[in-house]
Length: 253
Image (cartoon, rainbow, N blue to C red; front, side):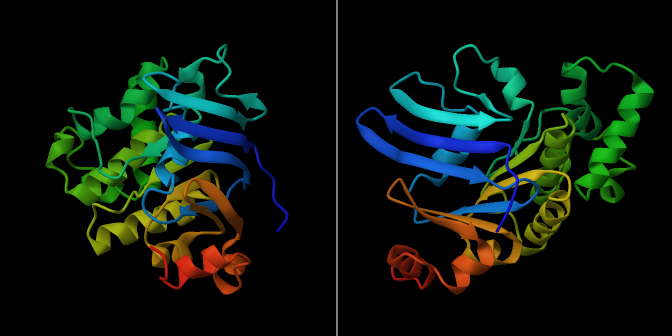
């Protein structure tokens, strides 16, 4: 599988106090594809995802070694400005975390922080990104209502719209459907599949059926090590490593 990549991980190791979480991970993430990070609980999936957004600054016993390059820039270089890096990443957490303000203000928040104060322009941006998140038709008549009144599934799509509104290059999802009902999960999965036309998407999931449904590329971690990675069809049909086969067949979980 030939692919372009502007997100590269080189010899990444992460340690929390005396506990080694990730061990020498080297990986290119394909552009404009959905990459699913899979593996048993505690294997380092979320740590790897958080490292891509520099949410693991080396403080409080956290030791990060190696490099993560976004457009050739090492995001862990001490001279790099963190806000500039995080603007390139839209992050969806396990549980939606809307800001304590209106639906409209949630989406407008990022553009305002980055200097956009024009009301007409903000109106267009809010509509555009709510449509991209598949939420516009459900909320267009109540944009001034508190975001907290939305259902959990709607809140997750609102958080997706809020993340998109800062015009990231990459969307990161940490089990973004784990708190949602099946119908809301389908909404989010459908949006991610559509969004990969314009964004690089990296998702942690513990649901193999979900990875089969949405992923173009698979990253399999086991005990902090990168065991295998490659096109989803190849990994699911013919895994090369015995640990991958054991995980996919349920022998290890």
